[in-house]
Amino acid sequence: MPESHSHVPVESITSRIFLVGGQKVMLDSDLAELYGVKTERLIQQVHRNPARFPEKFAFRLT
Image (tube, rainbow, N blue to C red; front, top):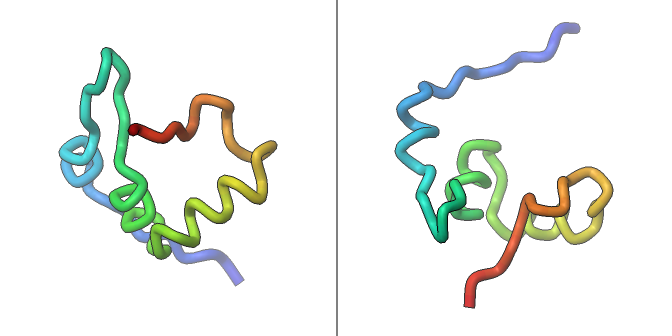
């Protein structure tokens, strides 16, 4: 059975990208919403599967 993929309008993605310190970033909550998961679940997966995410994929602002 083929997988169903819903398309997200480009404007919906680009409006969630911010420029911070010269780097393009997205908030974890926005990224989780685009993937259709809870923010906590996205963060959990990044921590549990570091090999699946580039080193610069996530950083914490303080």
